[in-house]
Length: 149
Length: 149
Length: 149
Image (tube, rainbow over all chains, first blue to last red):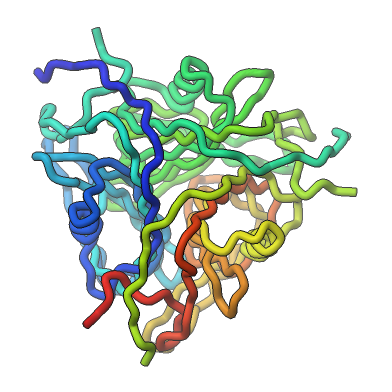
């Protein structure tokens, strides 16, 4: 069991980035490499655009692992929201995505992998205490706030 | 009929918070209690994670009330976005959520209640004019901008 | 083919706006008119609320145009996220939306048009380099970052 420590969770706003990532970029990898390059340790991410294909995940709590949902063909990236924090001392992006097809039907999950046709990405850097993911059961999580006594 | 007053709606960015709420927290209640504790009167919220169960709402305009949509079993919290403002002088969180199952199928609505397995929450405080919800028909709303003459 | 230039994409946070747009406002037009009035050239947008009807789009890459998805009847606006940038020197809002019905079923796409019942809109202005959409194939896009050599 991880020792749960109280985290100072109040943060200040740092830099903001709004950009288009190149066609054939891979998400969330591109966001992580961008964060690495720009030295962003903590932040929030959101994106819209179009993906050529994607792999989504559903966390199976019984099995303790992600079930993979394969999404084929070009889909609108209706929503991708999440955050950047540290895992093994490197920027790690945790993003959930919802995709839409030509009828408007949606499919969603944890974004394991997506290949970009068009990706408009917003990243807002947060400055303050280091936020690090540690293994807790089958997941990599931050210590919860408020701390459990 | 409420008197519609012009609101100065330009705001400044206050504090930012990115944290994990504890397992079995209830949303949106946890966000409201957090806002109360941190004295956040206005802000925006977004979250991703996993919910154990949830109750969503669809506002039936004819009946003037929310229809409830019960969601059973663990679902990915694909998107929860919304805001914090004042209602009866206390922080009130208005959040819409979209959940996903193991096939990627989604269900969404006004987030009435959700029980957290994992909840990664971002809150951005906004500073400025007080934004208060007042009863207008069957809903609690802010005065619209621009004001109706 | 557009010449791809390196863009300085780091931006600073400007003003923030959280407000309710009036009933029967049209999205994304209202956001664009608001941006024009407030002289917002770049920013991010998100919104929740309820729409009376909507027209969504799916970009058909083969045909090089948007297929339209007509959504009739009042739906919860579960998520509307996107950005504001310049197109033909005027503020242009690019927004993707997901709507939900009384059973929680969702439909989503590029938000071509929506008629508002209730719209709670957040806009965060970004200050820095001008971000302009230029025609690239069948779409209006920003130059990608990092630049292609």
